[in-house]
Figure (cartoon, rainbow, N blue to C red):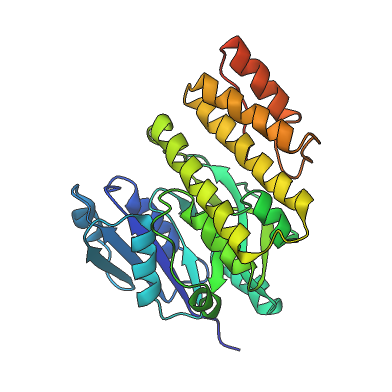
Length: 305
């Protein structure tokens, strides 16, 4: 049986010092991709010169700056493989990532999208990787909080074609919106093996907090429009409570003490039951965040799943 063809999509914008490492990690896979599509989203640095060192199967597409969604959409239009794999320009892959994921997807035809665990980058992957279990992500759990990191995802192109384009108007959580739309059409899962090196480059924490809050509020509004919360008031309360908790954490990290406290309070009012450990990394995180905000100190932890 022939190996499935994988198209790797790498959007890049002014990531000249980092994108060669991403491309190299894609080319160095034990199961080589059919093509690596790098979409240069109007870079003004030396990205083009750094990418020139790579020949086929790397294909560089130039376009005016339109944001990560526009770059990923252009990559999807150009992809020809049965699978598409997303890799951000500042992240890297373990050399065995594509082989492991495509083998899982080949054996689980009902799964349309598969992510992996991550390790902080710069760093290193474990010497001995576990076989890893496969954990399906239910739509209702994904609605509460994002369970996928973009650079971990491999998905069937036929599913991507059904999902459509990334929503460029979100400018922040557009990837989360995309996984939600995929999960509404197909089973999605994570492979519990750290196969992706994730680099938290960040940016302006203040701008990020405002942009992400606006985007996530729009995503919940879109979900309400689909009727997914119909006769499910507990899920609706929990989703909005987690939204406020995420906003509280982001505003707290940005130094917006009042906004952090306001959102944490709203989260508890919406859903006074403690979030399960599958949803948060920090037990009683909302209460601890409120206490930190009232003291004027920085909350240490993460609201990520």
